[in-house]
Image (cartoon, rainbow, N blue to C red; front, side, top):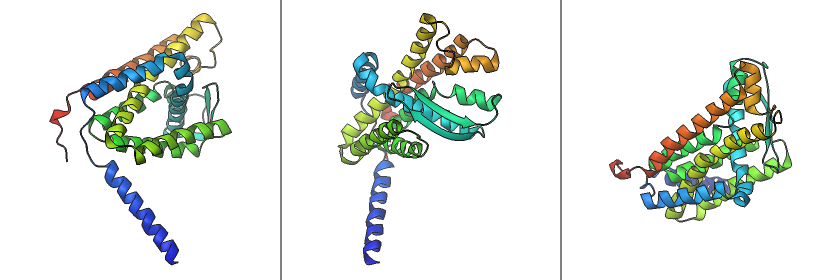
Length: 255
């Protein structure tokens, strides 16, 4: 029992230390750092070899938001699958039509942008470590819904990488990583939307199972209209998030 008590005491101390660090407000990254991290994220999104690897993170956010929307609208989440070709599938049970299904389908493509917007607000307010730990917590919750080995591996590796940065990296490195991840979510949300439209243009009918085409079948609005909605939401999040990341932080009252 003494060993169990010691273990619980040590665990409690670790949790307390993590909470204290995560809720400690710090100065947001300076504008040059924000610009540099944004440039790095943009290069990763535009450079095809890097994008082929890092796009898995966008897929994780995409499918995760499908799952959140399904649960929020009263649907039953049956599981999420993530594939090595960066595609994914979220299965939910409920009415095949109606607002719940529409919102579930709508949430996917703007999901990474919305995640980036929330991250940008936390980084802007001076909580980069809280942002990293929050992402880790959400990834751990997502693990409970993953239904294939590659999905488990990709989510676990993502979470472990952020845990390592959050736990061992110096404060300035954590801030830079948080800003880079935020920029990547904001910028990386746009490319899949453009790729979806290009796919539809080049191969007519090939993308009939995409979110946009399923929304078109449910609402009788053309798929291109829904792609426009995806793009507008992603660009709006990018504009607001970019403003927060590049804005002057001197008005913040640091505690």
